[in-house]
Length: 281
Figure 1 (tube, one colour):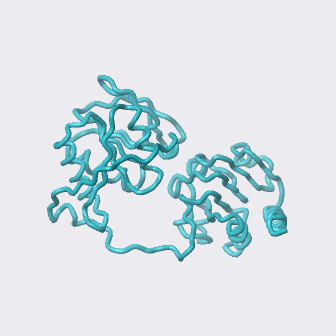
Figure 2 (tube, helix red, strand yellow):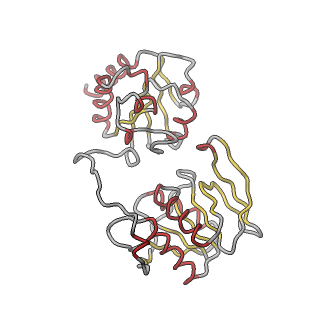
Figure 3 (cartoon, one colour):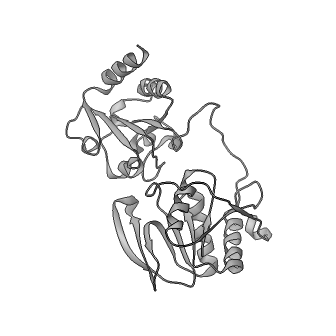
């Protein structure tokens, strides 16, 4: 039997689909108070393992899933295979997982009485929702010593990068923080969100929360419009889950163009302005 940790959002449904390939699945969510505490989630996983004696525990490779499973692995003195793209039960289990931000795949074996895995983002189609069993663990003060105490909510009506069906991304080629105004306009017309490359956030043109890439958000929109982005591997890691990619760049040799389904070679400000005009018309 496979235990699958379910959080709100599509990533958990992807992890559920992955787990269903491995055997019968019991999905559970953790009820450990309003504030997220990694120690509390780890305690819940440990207690669920003791209660059900599963063959494996699977979670999405989200920030919370990765952190909670790492804590649980440490408590149970078990190995954790993170960012898995496939798993084959056996003795030992064989797994393939992403390394170096997804730039290479590693074949490995996984041992231990209970196999602990997190599922790489956007590598399987999400499963249909299933019945989820809530679980309230027995917690100590130490389990909740580290927890979220405050949240910074985005402005009302804001579309998040991870939920947006269309993402308009900007890189160094945008030229300045003010240059993102035209990208904001395009995203608004398409009901999407605006993101940026790492260099853009390093320059202070956009907040880190807007970064798409290995050390930022990993997105999977229907369409990603990359404006003035060269296409470093770290950025590709963040956007490769997009169903379609349109690149706009004045450099015909930019790596981003080779990674795209569609490409326009030209000044991004002129091209985006023309697209906006056509959309408004």
